[in-house]
Image (cartoon, rainbow, N blue to C red):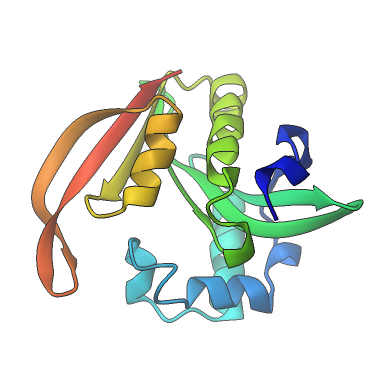
Length: 177
């Protein structure tokens, strides 16, 4: 599948609810390769644990998780997730994190479109003025997605994270919205 087979209107974000928790979602969360640049790699996930995460997020006042869906032949395909978290309503900033879990839909620009859409939500719904995204320095895919969305490198935390038994740098990107 190429990006030409769908447009930005065919990528939608829907707030996560427990009906979206599936064996496919569980497989993403337990994939060592997919989660290699996230703190999720340290956890063993189960359907009940993911459901508890979704329920807790829905109750939260400063964390919002969305499923990334592609509309294909009038059906919605859940391909990943994106989250606005740690919303500080006083200072009007938040963090984002994201992943495209379905391998068939990686490297097609969907992550970039999802970020554009979540930035709109952050700005309009939550009145956020600045968004941050922290990534492992060796996560070139996320780096490209953030730069494509005009994020700028705001800070580096040398040897903050452990990756393959070595200390690596965390990069913090930001964007004023």
